[in-house]
Image 1 (cartoon, helix red, strand yellow):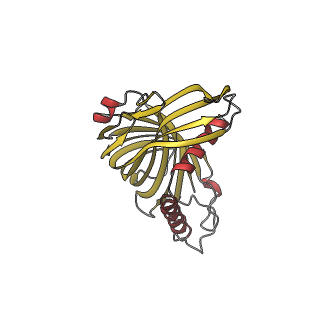
Image 2 (cartoon, rainbow, N blue to C red):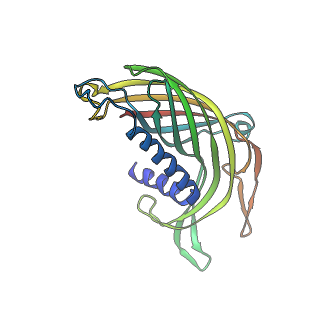
Image 3 (cartoon, one colour):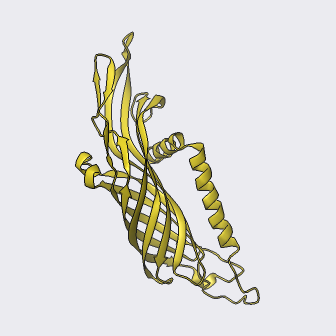
Length: 267
């Protein structure tokens, strides 16, 4: 599991561009800055259940292609996702940003290192991936052990297929080389909804001057993403013959249903 987590992190780090990182970090910094400057009654120091201002979450992400995308990609994707949001005081609104990464196709084979070194074997891994970034506006019920919300999202999906050469054995080998076979962007918009089930509460210890961790909840969320057209590869779309690789590129809309299950933390 640790190796899989590191592999996912390395994939995201190596594929996301510098402007993408800067945009994400800028939005995250703004959200935390807003939370720190949220109004509080300085004269009210008694212990009260101060409403949270920041919610953050992380968990497992599942992706289910639908529409034209589903006609072409039959298998679901699996990955991770995380988000941070700012709860606008005295309103049910939450604004935020989330990131996700999933693999929707995976192939592995063993090859000779080269024609001149046939006695050394390496692993060759091809993966079809989606990296996503979405801004969201959420309307949710007031803090309680059971909360529901609906939301609208807008963002993009970065679809890319990469091939990596790995040292063997499989579970201890290091990456030798990698290449991106094809990549493209798809702009997305969509709607979703979810439920938060509180499993721990620390509201009794909070004051306006000491906003400690308020609660931890289980979160289940579903979203529908209406994706624009993009070029992409499916599992098996790289055909190798006579020392060359041919790409069977597919172009279609990229509609996607995602399911997120994880933990949400209120501050």
